[in-house]
Length: 407
Length: 65
Image 1 (cartoon, rainbow over the protein chains, first blue to last red):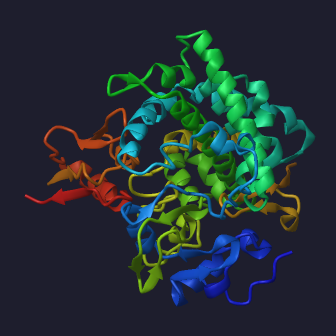
Image 2: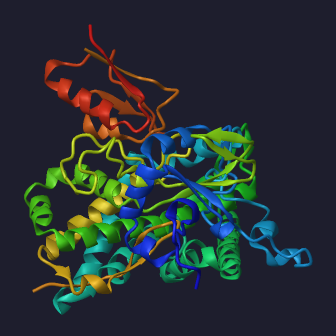
Image 3: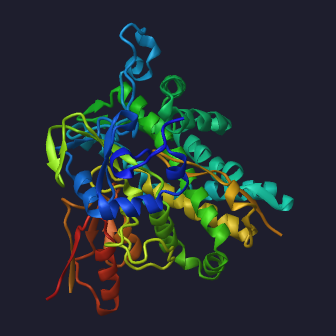
C-alpha cells in the first residue's frame, strides 16, 4: 500500500481509496487553497481544479500536448525487452486522434466525427433500447440486481461491438481487456501492456477479416474505405482509431450510467420528476454528466511554461481534472446539488477545445435510453447498503459494485 | 437580436442545437451555424441566451440590433 496522503496540495494520490470514493471535498479544498496542485506520485504531475484553468490548458495545445493522455506514468519497457512484447511498439500506433496533436489531429478527427454525429448515433437508439429492456427484464422479478455489474457495464461494450462490426458475444472479454488497460492496469504496467496487446491483436484480426470481405456497413468498414488526401487511411491508423473507439467508449459510458443509477437510487424526488417530465431528460443528462463527470485526462508539457505561477517543465504531466472543474462554484451555482433543470451548465465533462470527446453524442444517447428503460420498469428502488458500493477511479470514476433492491 | 457562432471556437458539443434547434443547425462533424441570417424571433430570445450560457467553448454571441 502507498503511504497515506498528509498534504493534498503537494502529495495528492488520485488512486487513494478516499479520493476515489469521495473526491469532492478534496477538490473544494484544492480549488480554494492551491488551484494547481503538484504531486510526485505515479510519475509526478500537476493538477488544476478550477474551471478557468482547465479551460485555458485544454485549449493551449501548443504548450500542452496530447501525446500522452494517461494519468499515471507508463513505465518504459526494459532496454533488453523483446520488441514484440510491447503493445504500442509492436503495432507502431497510438490511439488517434486522442493521442494526436495538430496537424495529424485535424484530419484524424474529421475522419472520426461523422459516424458519431447525433444523427448517425440515432440509428443505434432502437438497438440500445432493446438491449436495456432485455437486461432489466432479466432481473426485474428478482427484486435486486447489481446496477453496475448487471446493468451499466453490460450496455456500452455491446453497442460498441455492434458499431465496429464485431460479435457482441465478445462484450465480456472487451470489458475485461478495457478494465485491464484503463482501470486496473494503470497501476500495473504488465497487466496494462498485456491488455493493450490483446485488444490490438483482436482488432487487427477483425480488420484483416474486413479486408477479406470488403464493403461492410460498420465502423471498421467505414475506416477502411475512407481516404485522406486521396489515399486510403494508413492501416496502422485504422487500428489505432479502432483501439480508441473501444477503450474510450466502454469504461467511460458505463461509469456515467452507473453514477446516474446510483444518484437516482438515493433521490426519489428526481426519479419521480424524470418519470413525470420525460422532456426534462436531455437537460437532466447534462446535469448528471456535470455532477458525476467520469473522465480525467492528462496532457504532456511540450515546452517549458509557467502557468498560474507554476513552473512546468517539458515532459511534465498535467492532470486534466474536468470533474473538479464541473463543481467549481464560480461557474455553477450550488455545484454539489444535482438540479435536473439547471439552466446554466457549460460543463466540460467531455473536455473542451479540439479534443472534445468524439463519442459525446453516443454517450448521451446511451445514458438517456438506459435510464429511461430502467425507470420504466423499476420506478422505485434504493441502494441495498450505501457503504457497500465500490468505486473505480483515477482516469475514469464510476461505481463498480452497486447492489440495489426494489419492492 | 441575432446569434452568431464563432467557427474557430465551436468544437461540435451540440449543446446549442439541442437547446435551440430553431436557431442553430449542425453539420456532420457537429459544428454549429445559425439558421438563416441568425435573426432571433422574440419567442426564442430566452433560448438564444441559454445557448450562449451553456456553450462550453464560449463560441456563441448575441448581437443586439
